Amino acid sequence: MKKKACEKDLCRQRMASKANEKPEPVHTVNSPKKIRSLSQEGQASSSSHSSTSSWNEEPVTSNMDISTGHMILSYMEDHLKNKDRLDREWEALCAYEAELCATSSATQPQNIKKNRYTDVLPYDHSRLILNELTNVSGSDYINASSITDHDPRNPAYIATQGPLPQTAADFWQMIWEQGSVVIVMLSRLMENGVAMCHRYWPEEGSEVYHIYEVHLVSEHIWCDDYLVRSFYLKNLRTTETRTVTQFHFMSWPDNGVPNSTKALLEFRRKVNKSYRGRSCPIVVHCSDGIGRTGTYCLIDMVLNRMAKGAKEIDIAATLEHVRDQRAGMVKTKAQFEFVLMAIAEEVHAILKALSQ
Image 1 (cartoon, rainbow, N blue to C red):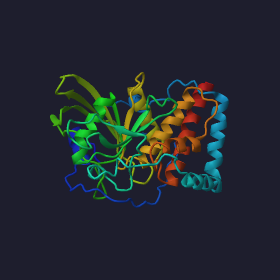
Image 2 (image 1 turned 180 degrees about the vertical axis):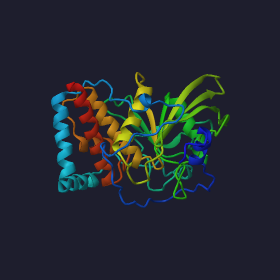
Image 3 (image 1 turned 120 degrees about the vertical axis):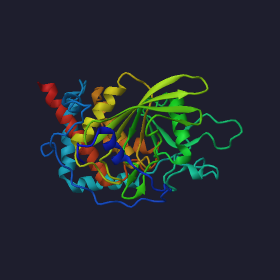
């Protein structure tokens, strides 16, 4: 896409979507793309609102245990080189079943229309529960799951589907009630003519979603891979306002993986820099809230554990832990392989920085 167009026009061209958005019952899996390594990845171009230093951020200061880092790096490289071992590990993960797997709330008659896909439903025990509206049956339901790491009282993420037209107000209610200030969006609105997500924010100015007014403050294209939007979110009942930042990664195909680990790792650093010091959950969504969403959450969770000095890291067990809370997280073997590649790249960069 040419840089001649002004920033706003460029963004509109990328995100324009006027097609009818109907739920899709199932997904078809695309052939995995070849992933470019760091050495093959060129410098990302930046918009007039960005700078080279703000895009190419180095790994943050880490308390990573160096011996653990080398062990993890060895594990990753072994699995990435030994495809049979990777295949066996993925097969074992596919056979894993969560003990608590009831989805009765999601299949209630009044809630069925709130699910984008009929085969992607939140578990009852980990579903995000909204404050129920007076005399409105099912108003506490949204297709979203709380994802915890080590502390079950404080979810690290909320994994959710791309909002539908009829659930956009529920989405903003969830953002407000959970105190979330960061949204990670990993899909486009439309991909190959298929609706992935309803535009749940105003193209310009403000829109009201139930009792929440959302005002688009700014929209910056940082590079070809992602852009950042800032919103003022106002509760019209209390007049309280908050700032919410949406990080929108646009070069990740449905059921696939990004072209490179570099772009996503730099995107993650940008997200975490904005989030640093906060304790509210990060809201992560793609279209179904399990494939790209699960992949991002797993990468982030493992790297955060390592940054805090964890002595032992079991990536397969961590994925099982995440799948205990939302079924199907990380949908394909290519996505699991991408997780290993991304973690290996970041660990390598951190070890290099620590040795200097």
